Every structure is written in structure tokens, then in C-alpha cells.
Length: 427
Image (cartoon, rainbow, N blue to C red; front, side, top):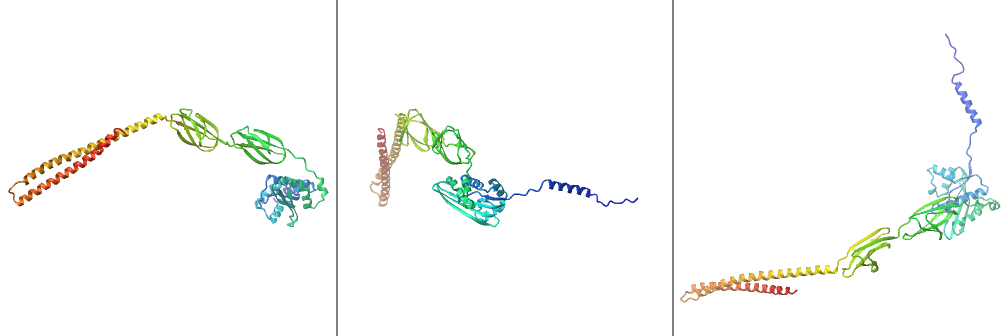
């Protein structure tokens, strides 16, 4: 059986309804095109290419003034930060040249771009603003102003500078008035609490402390608490915000305790009297100190200690009585006397004993000498025998003299040590 094929393809039944659906959606919701902003104001920077909170606030004021002058389509600062951060090829912190500024303008998709630098000091503030055409990549206008006084005085000259920069009607600039400023609040907490607070030199209260009526600006915060180092710091408070600060104070002094046995000993620190023990002080400046401790009838004691801030040092000293020291000295003196007597007595006895030994040897030698002399002194001896006996006699005599000399020497040495022994009895 022959089946005839359909001329109309089956897949068109799906394509046509989908096409119609998409077309109807496109008619009901037209495509949204991004509206191109007319102008963007880049964050101002100082000559060191740094944007401080004060300078950032000045940038916001410039945006407000431009809006007041009729430039309604201004790119917000949040959008600028978001778009620039999305492109890693551009870094505002290293962007110095005009070409880089125009590249930023192209990234932001604006017609014109404003950038500038500000260098504030206590005497004057130098403000420089430039207006550039992004598409043509050229600078349209540049305005510089030297303002007397701090950075806060620059707000008074913004209308005049922007009128010259944008080349608008000065009357329009005078008609704009800034919105009333929003107050900011500051909460100050210290560790430990109870510190006296001064803001710009005026006493405000005790920590923990909160104030809700501060205008935007720079303030000098000072905290003072007994036994702690004074704290001082300048802070910038933006408009309409709440700032919380926790300040940990640093102890200024160290703590020293001195204990002695017995107590009531007089103390001098670096030769300055400070009191008696038990001694305790928690207001001592950090550093090295020499301590002298004295007590009647006790030996003076000298020691040292190093004091550190926030640390406690304890010095314990046991004093020694003068009587005990004297008894020790007497005992040592007695021991030395006994030792000298023993030494002198031993040496006297030893050398005397050696002298007695040589005296006995001399007596024996003298007896031999007498025998030799008797043998020599005989009649009727031949010359040869006479000479032989004479030699024997001479040898005996020399030996006797030798022993006597040694005896006398050891007797003398023993006598000297005996004299030393006798003297040591009395000393």
C-alpha cells in the first residue's frame, strides 16, 4: 500500500510557534540599552598618589557641585570603583599619565572625565583639576587654585573652580546650596576603662564614652589615665557614620616590692632614700635601679633590679648580723692561728730531728776520726804506711766536718721555725 508523504515538514510545527513566541516577547519588552553617562569624577589624590578619607570626601563634594551645576548624568563613585575593579589591566593607584586617565574614561564609558590632585598642608592647600574628552583623548580645560589654610577651606572654592572648569554660568553656581551636613557619632572604649577623654583639647568625659553630634572632619582624640601612658591620635570622621574605637592603654610604671629579714631596713634606690621594708610601690619608671639596704648592727647589702612597664618585681633579702660576721671572722682567725702553730711546730720538729740525726752521724764520724788519728800517731812507721794512715785520718776528718755542717744548718733552720712558733702563740 502506497503512503503519500506530507509536503509540509513535521519539524516546522515546532519552529513556527517558537519563533512567534520569541517575536511576541520582543514586542512586549523592547531591548534595554545602557545609557551612557556624560561625566565621571575620579577620586582625587595627593602628590604621593594616595587618596585619604579627607580627599575622598572632597571628591564627593565635587560630584555634588557638578550635579548642582546641571550635569545630572554623573557616574557615581560606587559605579566607578565597581567598573575599575572589574578590569585588572587598570590600577588607579599606579595611574599617573593622561593616557591612563583616558583609558579609565573609556572603561567607564563616559563622554568626559575629571581628575586632579590635592596637596594639603597647615598653611595652604594646592588643588588642581583637569577636564578631558574621552573620545578625542584630549584635555579640554585645567584649573589650579592655591587656597590658604587647611584642606577644609577648599570646599569654599569648589563652585568657582568647577564653573571655570566646566565653563558654565556663574549665576547657576551661586544658586546651589549644599545639603545640611549629617552628624556623625563616635564610641570610645579603653582597656582599662575610666580614662579621661579630650577631643581637640576639650574634656568630654570618661571611657566608655559616646558622642552623637560631631560634624565631619579631623579630630584629635586624647586619653589620660593614672599610671598609664597618655594616648593621642588624629582620626577622620566621615559624614553621617558611626565610628567605634577600642584603645588599649600601655602602663607607664612598673611595680616593685622589697622584703627583708629582719624588716624595717632602710632602702635607697640609686642613692635616693625611698623608705623602709616591707616596701611596695606601683609608680616606678622603667629602668635599672641599684638598691642599698641598711639595718643597725647588720651588714649593709647592695643589690640591683630592672623595672619593666606593667611588670611586678619582688626582691627578697636576708640580712646578716654583724655579730655573726665577727664570730665567723674570729673562728677563721683562730683556725689560721692554729694552722700556723701546727706548721711552725712541724717544721721546727722536723728540721731539729734532721739536725739530731746529723749530730749522731758527726759523733760516730768523730770517733772514727780519733781511731784513725791514734793509728796514724804510731812510731816506727814506714813512709808508705805513714802516708796511708794519714789519708785515712783526713777522710775521717772531712766526713766529720760534713756531718757537723749539715747538723748546724738544720739546727739553725729548726731554730728559725721555733722562733716563728713562739711568735704565733701571741698572734
